[in-house]
Length: 139
Image (cartoon, rainbow, N blue to C red):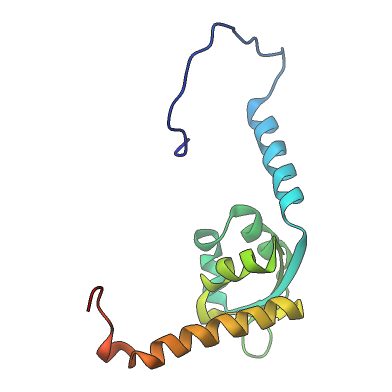
């Protein structure tokens, strides 16, 4: 709804079929949409803190998949999960939200993209001198 700029009322009308369950239909449509747009999976290691915060950081289907696939904690306390992903480019943006409490285990291409991205970010912050000499807009 936040993307609608203008609406126009049309002359026709609509009759809801008897027994139609809008909530169930909507959920089925969302599930189908998610299944069609997410072509792959990523295996992650998550700290308990990130696993707890996942519903606030990613879409519900991703958080649900992580919760449902979560294994026992490893010796470092991290939990292995499997989550659905769209493209590797999209996944990088989503997974960066998880911070250092998440590590991509596979697929190798996604892991390599994460390495390149966080290396580039670290280079930007190192070049600017870190927090003490942060650049200001226009400065």
